[in-house]
Amino acid sequence: MPNMLVSGSKIRAPVPQPALPEDITALAPRLTRRIVLAALTSLAAMTAAQADTPLLTLTGTVDGKPGTSVTFDAAALAALPQITFTTSTVWTEGPQEFTGVSLGAVLRAAGMTGALLEAYAANDYSVEIPVEDWPENAPIIAHSRNGTAMSLRDKGPLWIVYPYDSDPAYRSEVIYTRSIWQLERIEVRP
Image (cartoon, rainbow, N blue to C red; front, side, top):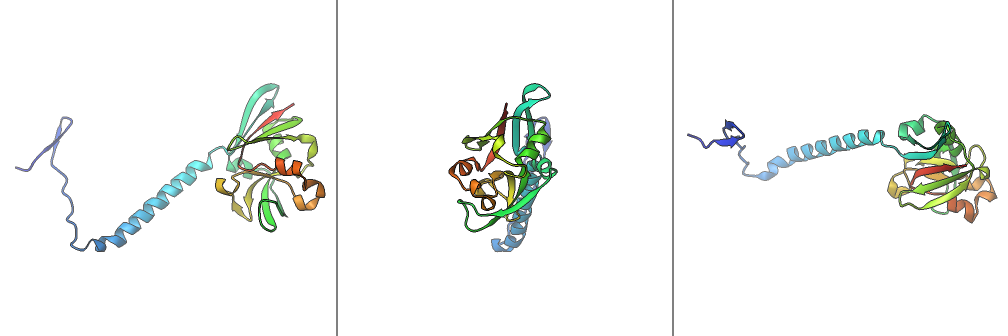
């Protein structure tokens, strides 16, 4: 009688194991395909899970209620009017094309108004940005550079960018300081 394994209150026969071939390299093509397929499946699942992940949180007053938070995922930001411009930066080499949403459009979409923004990066670096200091289409909250989504390692996923080449006023230490990358949240203050 074969050895029986007891699992809970059920008795079951051991699962037969396949015999290994003499030359293990015969398994390599099948294993490689399985590993690649498993990795791609995991990547697809992670990407799908991240699609709903909030990229940006705004906190401020909405409909008279202070402390209200509004979050934007990638789809919500993509649904807002997009602005693309090419400019040089002090952090990159040569002209770069940035695409994103104007800061004003994000505030309107959140239903918030204020005189001062406190922007926070992933590492908790923060900077104040007075609302009066920017026109309608600048700065933008860029989500892609040169047509590619920015990773955390590449100053993304969100970066406040000004069209530095369009106006000498944008090429100042104050504006460079306000060009916060790895942006995660904004507090809107009166």
